[in-house]
Amino acid sequence: MAYTLAELAAASPDEFVSGVMDYFVQETQLMKRLKWTTVEGLSANVVYTEDRGVAGFYGINETIIANEIHPKTLAHSILELVGEVVIPRLAKKGFSQDDIVEMNTRNETRRMGEVFEDELFYGNGSGQSLLGLHALANAGYMQEIHLTANATPAGCSLLKLNQAIQMMRGKAQVICMSLTTYLYFNALLQLKGSYNTDRDEYGDLQTMYQGLPVLALPFLKETELTGAGDGQYDADTGGGASSIFVLNLRPSDGVFGIQNGGMDTEYFKQTEDKVGEKVRLIWDCGIATYPKWCGVRIDGVDVDGAWTVAGES
Image (cartoon, rainbow, N blue to C red; front, side, top):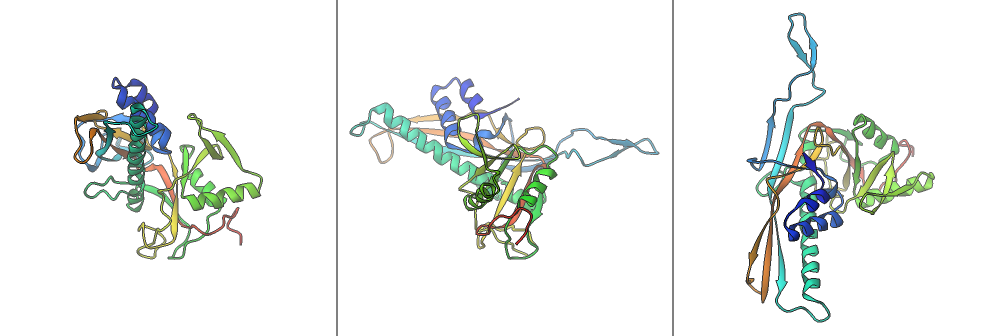
């Protein structure tokens, strides 16, 4: 079974961990939308093939001719996400002890969420790093649209975004773009009278496009660069481009969260450099992705380029 962070929070027997999960829901944009599955015994970054059976037509010799519509290769990446909440012995002036604990816990949860969401996209799978979506797209794990065939980024269009959504064959659930790209995208929608918003299930306001929420993510970089000059913007630094991700968040064939058990806590009676206590949060968590239907990446997006309807000048 797969659960949202809100459902994990409600099910946790540990009141402190439940509160931390609630803060993840409040302080993250994409992480809270993932469905989470509990796994055991997985190593850090692995791509493996699981036996999911075969679909196809019987051939002349009565063997099944397999098709590749339903891929069987699953990439997973799981590491320890760690945070520390300091609980001072004496409350600061104007704040109660409970206020300080709540504030410090929320701030640390926000930092942990930022680390996870950054790694979700730009982890390179080496050392203490998840295998992120950018690296998976570079490796051919995700469908791609290159806006340009060279090292000069291009402005995106609604036509290209529509193409990416269409390539997902009804499986798309969310659109992710950088802050500047999001501003130009919204400006075009407002100009054309097509700007729509809605409240998500958590009460947060979001832009909607073709029934999909559009997220402006501050950690989606605007410095991507094509290394080989072939149109694939595989480097995340050194350039002036960004990427747009149209994602499927279903555990059956998309991108989803995995955890090796739940979150653990360690309590320390004193800290190294302050008078007070400390709670260490330890969560073996990461992501798993199925190829092709996990999403579409549009790369080579000029972050300073105005959007068009169909690429017109």
